[in-house]
Amino acid sequence: MNFDNPDQFLVQLSTWIQAGLADNPVLAKLVGILLAAVPLATVFALCFAFTTWLERKGLARIQNRLGPNRVGPYGLFQPIADGIKMLTKEDIVPRASDHFFHLIAPLLVMGASIAALAFIPFGTNMTMAPIDTAVVFFFAILGINTLAVFLAGWASRNKYSLLGGMRAVAQMVSYEIPLVLSAVSVVMMVGSLDTTQIVAAQRIESWVDSDNAGLSFLGQIAGWHVFTPWGFVGFVIFFIAALAETNRSPFDLPEAESEIIAGYVTEYSGFKFALFFLGEYIGAFAVLGLAITLFLGGWNGPNLQPWWSSDPQALLIPGFIWFFFKMFILMAVLIWIRGTLPRLRVDQLMSFAWKFLLPLGLINVLVAGVLYHLPEESRLTAGAIAFVFLFLVAKILARMNSTAAPVRRNYRFAE
Image (tube, rainbow, N blue to C red; front, top):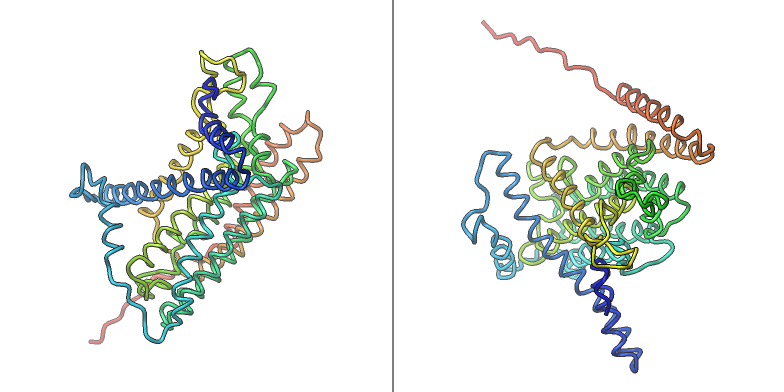
């Protein structure tokens, strides 16, 4: 094993273990799959536990409360207590429900969310399923969540669950269109559906390979798609649509407790409910991971070559550290939004998707297409014009969809 490159230590460890099993190719293949899948599931299970604690502490801070503070230092062991509670709670299944589909729905949500992670590159040579059509497969697999959520509502034989399931289908299908459109602009500009190539396209190699340390430093950041007009608008659309796709506030109407109790999870308890909860967070991690891959440079970040290494590709800070740092920054924004914005009405939610995000996404794809065909020397000026144009389009769409201010009521009392 070569320790010159800290970024590739885990990859080299996996390769070394599989090389020791070269005499048995079937066993080597099986061990390779386990070495990729088990750490992935373990890391994101730990991320889920930490994020639940972080969210509860963050929301408590916003609402002037303490949050978890009884189990462990600063309440850090609260996720363990919650997990034990969910494992020991009774699993109550309604007599009239479809027992098989009632069971399979949370497993589908959980399975689809974890499977989507396989197409996300967490670092150099750290993609579990490196295929040429990774972006397509990601959206296809994550779409199973829509069916699973409706299945949970339908199988429960409960009007509140069914309403929550139907809301989820309407919402997730509506916001999936602008979500995909925002990714189309990136795929079109890069010319590939491979997530690894999309990350590589966000490095300015001529700068990175420069002898100038400052220029090399900037070359790992300046190429991020979010710094382009089509990339910035695409990232905003993607992030908003991701909130709706993962049922995060203010788009959490499928489980609006003030209207339909708990929506499609009304008839779920114990570990089945925990699977829905876990699947929702893993799905959020997956979508944020794709946002980082498409717009925020993936595992690229300000980095330096280790002083002890002669490998020109070696990184002092491993790429997966930068990836998870970006992911938790975005998750903190999600928590901030949940503690700040009120829930939308159903009509507002649907209008926003079809009358604002969809036309803006289509125009953004058109702008990206125009910039793609312009000569390299004129792209800087054209990019500035595109920024202004997209801003004006967003303002016009917002003005067209704004509602009139409510008329002040005059109250009259009987004499």
